[in-house]
Image 1 (spheres, rainbow, N blue to C red):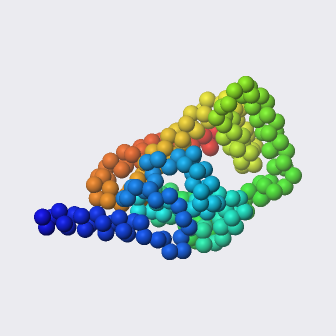
Image 2: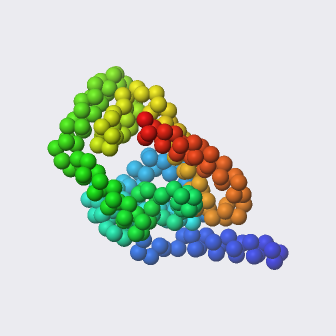
Image 3: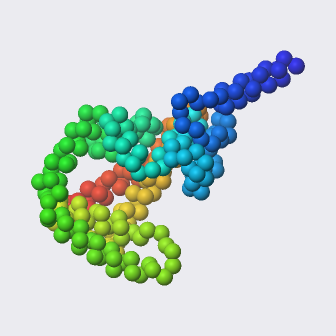
Length: 247
């Protein structure tokens, strides 16, 4: 009897904590206790929530609050502030921190603080020296745009996903500034490399579960995390990219 009473009290307490007002936080869908909106929050659900709660709403995913900004002006204003420049301290960031300790710089996307600031200034300075922001880059971009238009013409008969050629076009703009070299949209080497990058991104997304549900950190062994992250695949992709740069 006492055990049942304790369980009922615990359930009521957790439900109260979960359902209590969020203070000054934006409104949003309630979700499932302990799990949040993750199992069912699709694009359609996001649009429905936007129509119901407005351009600013919040959902719960595990233990994390997820803020959705649904209008361009507010998103631009928020993301241009220094306070929003930092990266979240997620499990995936720990992986890249370990890579840095292994002698691999964190680059820009996965860096924080002074390291990010220094790398960003270094990159922008040298890209400007190579032609970014000058008339030279306009000609490079227009070349890729013209080729993209021709490639898109073959996709006009039915709805389709964004083609692989967009990735190659973006790569070509940077690559021509850096090495005066461009790749064709059907280049097999680049296509294979991009596919491996996409696979790694999908693997990395699974690690987000450890941040949303921290209890999994005490259940999932480190060896399994390394398998999910695809450490060996990451090493191979890094080597292939270095080989690509040397060509």
